[in-house]
Image (cartoon, rainbow, N blue to C red; front, side):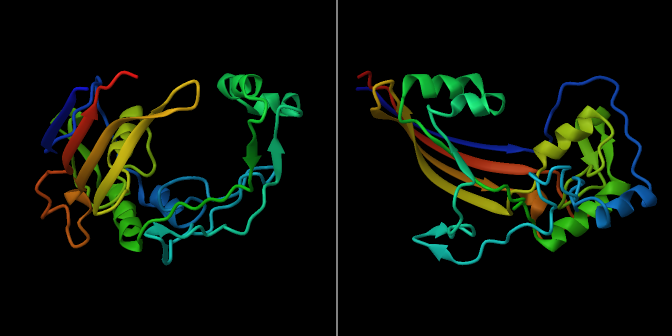
Length: 235
């Protein structure tokens, strides 16, 4: 057994991307108005899809209470709409990946329970308000390697280029800070679980500090501290 423990601290003053010819035209006031109308505050379609399998977004779910230190399940009483089994897998083949179909062949008792779709995404109102402001004021700096005029929300809720969409992903809402303590296991083909790493992750998102502003922002979007305990045992 060779056990290795390693701690890493890092911060990102500027999140770098690889691209060419960065350009951006801020959304107009008329375009931004959609974020308080037909679109969600983050720019997604608010309406349901044609067959209703994806419902309309009505504000998402704000977790309330805890159960054993975990978020309570807001849909705990729901039953599956249907289950996919080895006996009916052909009926749902067009909805399953090759990997999922292979699981049914390898494990006869494998089952996928399919539940009603819910659009649970939500964020604090102040994040929505900042996103609305960012829509008309965000602009690239340093040839697109950084941003100006943004703070505390999605920078480009009405993206017009791939670069804007990438920045939205990098600066997506998660929290003001996160502390995660978890273990990673590798499952073997015969069902054994092997511990591969023990992880402690401390995340800070100065960009999403509640009382900040573009004028006060110091350019640090994300800071983190990662501590790993890696286990290289070979069974």
